[in-house]
Image 1 (cartoon, rainbow, N blue to C red):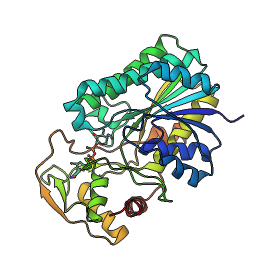
Image 2: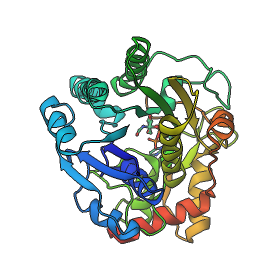
Image 3: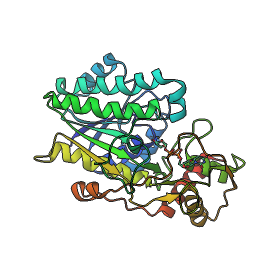
Length: 340
Ligand code: WQD
C-alpha cells in the first residue's frame, strides 16, 4: 500500500512542489496548512498537475489539539515533511517570539505526535543559513555551525538540535535534515509557484516582479564584495529539484535498511552564481530586460556561499538537474500567470 505522508505547510512554495513530486511517486498526501502565507487555490494547481487532490486540513501545527484530530481523522500516516514555518529573516528580527513559537512549537508538537501515531520518519527543512559566512566554499555538511545572525536562522539551528536530542533519547523515529541553499523557480506547468506576499525580500520574486513592471527597478545590494564581479554569490537550486530530494529522503527513512537515525544533507547545485550572473541568466533565458541599479549592502548578507552536494549525490542518489536558464524561464512563466 502507498505510504501516507503528512506535509505541513503543504500549500506553501516548497511544500506544494514537494506534494506534486510525492503524488507523482505514488504517495498519498495529507496537507495541513494555516494559510498564513499561502492560498487554498494551490490545491487546484496540484490537482491540475497530478490529477489528484490531496486531503487538506486547514489548521495550525502549533495547536496540539488540531494535530490530535488530524491523526485521528487520517490514520496510518507513515512520515512527515515539515514545511510549516515562518521564513522571513527581517521579520524574525522584529517579531522573534512569533518565529520561536511558530517554528519550534510546531516541531515539538509534530515530534510528540510521531511515536503515539506510529509515524516513522520526519524530513525537516533546514537551511544553509546554519553555516553563516563559510570559511571555505563549496561547503559540506561537516562545516561548523556558526552563531545565528537572526531569530529565523536560530530556529533552524535549535530545530536541528531538538530533533537530534529527541532521537538520541531513544524515540522510535528517524529524521533527515535537509539544508537548502537558495530555492528558486516554479513548476514548469506554471500551475504552482511562489506566491508574493507584499514587497518581496528574496531576489528572484523581486526580479520577476521588476521584469513584469510591478517594481520600477531591482536594487543589487552591493557590488564591492570580494567576488569576481563584486556582487554576492549564492547556490540557486530549482524548486522541483529540491522537491524531488524530499521524496528520496522519505523513501530512505521508510524503506531503507540500516540508515542512521538522523542524517543531514546539503541541497544545492554545487555551482555558485553571483547576483549579476543570475540577472544575466534571466535576461538571456527570457529576452526580458530587468532594470537594475547598484545600491548599498544589505545588513547581515553573506558574501559567498555555495554547496558541496556530494553527500546528497552519493548517498541519496540525488542531483540537481535543472539548468538555471530553464529555471528562470519557469519563474518568468509563473510571474506572467500571476499577472503584471
Ligand atoms: C540573495 C542575494 C542579496 C534581493 C535568505 C535566507 C535563507 C533562505 C533564503 C528562506 C543576496 C541579493 C536580494 C534584492 C539583491 N531562507 N538581493 N536585491 O539572503 O541568500 O537567503 O533567503 O526562505 O535562509 O537567509 O536570499 O534571495 O534574499 O538574496 O541584490 O532585491 O540577492 O543581497 O546577495 P539570501 P535572498
